[in-house]
Image (tube, rainbow over all chains, first blue to last red; front, top):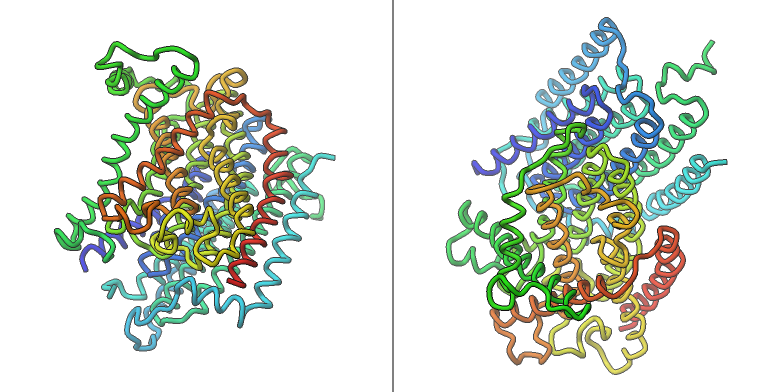
Length: 167
Length: 103
Length: 349
């Protein structure tokens, strides 16, 4: 499947370039909008992995929720009040150490995944990541976690409103 | 759809995304950018979950990813509320300027 | 993919994919011209004018003239805007609007991509419109644009909640998120449409008020989602010039405009699918062939486009606080009650 490969590399490039944009761009707004492309690219990879429900949830939660919140956060803390839009980084020495450490993490994880003997199962055989399967599991095996997540969201919602409101 | 991209490629990609996010968390000073980098790292982890569960036909991965997303949403709401409160109080979102608890 | 006649004709290959992806675009281009003409003519009739009369017979070529005018205009990028974001924003906006067409079934034999979570997908991609608007508004470096963008984001996020509940209710009733499946369950004439509670015995009459309420909630919410009157607060001329697209001109303005019109069709199509049987003929099996189906579908959806235009020239604009009052204190509780009623019906049915 040549088309599959092309699409994978396309989305991988989108994700990597935009992730770099999030971390290394000078302007905060560019970071925020790069994040849009990262989320989109990761969602595309989910589709390639035939996890379409998770892909759509990714768009819904991250793009429709978290990214909008982040953009509001950027706008409320920078331009309107006149604080500079540039965001600071550390000096070159600390940057170098952080870069090396992260590179070490990445290299370590890649080597680890390459050297692992993965189970030999048919790729994507009967992947039951359909909505029905996920829904069934959520309301049987993971019901407690589901309830806890709902309570967490409610508490976070109330707490956020309480913290962010003007006195 | 049978695939020609092996599992290791997906895992390597998510490792690189994770590392990029880690660089952001370690080097940037702006709280919101740190926040975005954390979201990157969470996405990398989610990608790992999905790729492994999709290659081995396991439904636990998507479920876990759903919970990660729920927690990420809660984290985004509370985190940004804290950043806003901080900005209102100290007129800064730079984490190195918030040093009242440091001695 | 068996739901797609194009793949039957030329096979499931790259050319087939491109043709399938481009077919809704052709439709949207033609539809946008019709909708622009409709907007001009309907506004004229409502205001007892004649509207455009000079281009072509009774002015039917006016939309083409308007499009040519927009394309010929100089593409101005104001000096102090943030150029990359300013240029990208209209395209993101249109991507979001067009992405929804991927799952809209025009007929039983044509749906660009028959994924089984179509309804959820349509709901999710509307998020791109918010990002596009905020991006354009922020990059314009203009206080009116920024205000318009903030208002649009707040409004669209708020109205997503009642819309989500309305969608959820229909999904509960149908037991599926697949649009084709939802439509198939409404077979057999008007009385079986989800507006009238779906299929079932005569005992379903008690649920009809609730499905009607959900229908109205979805329709009102979709007006807010597409920033149409009475919810055009983000672009209210009398307050903030033109909102988020104040600084746009020429081609890029046309993209925003085009995205708004294609969004109008998307929400109308979703209403049609959810409550009015999609491509099902209102007379059961009579006139229910594949071509008839697309005619029924498009005419039902165009009716709601007409209603949107009609409302635009009839109603005044809401204030921001009224907007928030309507969504959080009126629509949300009503939607919850209706959702529980419909879920109860789906359970005992």
